[in-house]
Amino acid sequence: MSVALIWVVSPNSELCNRLETTKFADLSKSRNCLRASKIKNFEKKDKCKSFCYMNADFSGFSGSNYAKKPGLISRVVANPGGELAVSSEQLVYDVVLKQAALVKEQMRNKEDIEVKPDIVLPGSLGLLSEAYDRCGEVCAEYAKTFYLGTLLMTPERRKAIWAIYVWCRRTDELVDGPNAAHITPKALDRWESRLENLFNGRPFDMLDAALSDTVSKFPVDIQPFKDMIEGMRMDLRKSRYKNFDELYLYCYYVAGTVGLMSVPIMGIAPESQATTESVYNAALALGIANQLTNILRDVGEDARRGRVYLPQDELTQAGLSDEDIFAGKVTDKWRHFMKKQIKRARSFFDEAQQGVTQLSSASRWPVWASLLLYRQILDEIEANDYNNFTRRAYVSKPKKLVSLPVAYAKSLVPPSRTGVVSKILDV
Image (cartoon, rainbow, N blue to C red):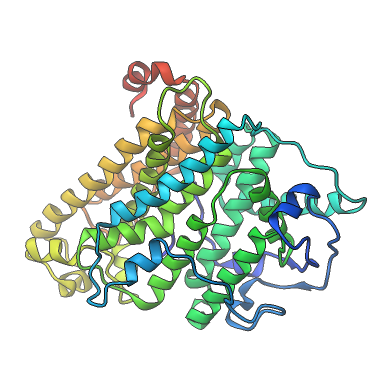
């Protein structure tokens, strides 16, 4: 099940064979050292053909030997009966508050988000620049629409978003790429250990180095990254979700996290009167909406893999079961069920739309494009008479071309005029 990145992505299994990894020596022993002397003392090593060696031992990474902090994950698994002690939305909101607090702390300290690279040792800046360029190339190839929008951002924001995109893409490919059958929980533990090292200024390869530099410059918390890895773990052990509360948590893990990673990079408009928490909630809602849309679009594809990403209790209430999904027949019961699922997804898009205009003006276009294009997938499911078993809903190129200028027009709307112009430009 591909994660619904907040950006418009064109999945391609060949990515796993295209991302070159270049091992670096340790950059520093702590994140504070990285802040003081960005990306230094690293050198290129022999290149691997793919990052999909995750199913084998990393050189220098023997597993997760760091202490787990109590937080979202531990609270979810603490109940021996398997029930969530509190709702998934409350658990996720705790992460939202933490991330929002980091941004507000930076604002209180009056640090300028438009950072400039620190002084680095001769020879190292070129390698770091090459790392960011490689991230940009990957983004341009596999997320063309979003990449186009990033070109409007400031150089520092643009490079940072590319680095985050590539990390999310690589993480998704671990369980959804060509080598997914060989990925084990231990491999994901090693990937998480590698993430910890990355945040501490010790990247393993060129693409890691770009993200390591990014998280040293922007108020990005590690928890959303760790939570995305937890979503990958869920895909290894879970193929059914008994209710929407469980499904919501999964959607947060694999897609809502992207919004929390991205807002510190994209920035909030100086003239915005919205609270930091509300902007993060909107970004979270967009990730949830995108993932729910993916789930509804891919019902047939997932069923052929033995997976059902739909609330089991709601299927039962509609008089449906897994057998009906595996049979792949569009019935009146299925249409009625799908109408409710689509309505829910649209409600998350509505919530997200309220926050997009609060972002920095230079960052709005790619997010608006993602929202408009992904939302149209729901329209296509309806146009296909809810046949998401054998027909894949997609937005045609002409419709995409029409949506891009609409998204650009929406991106020009300042926060104070959101309500008026949104109605005029609504599509």
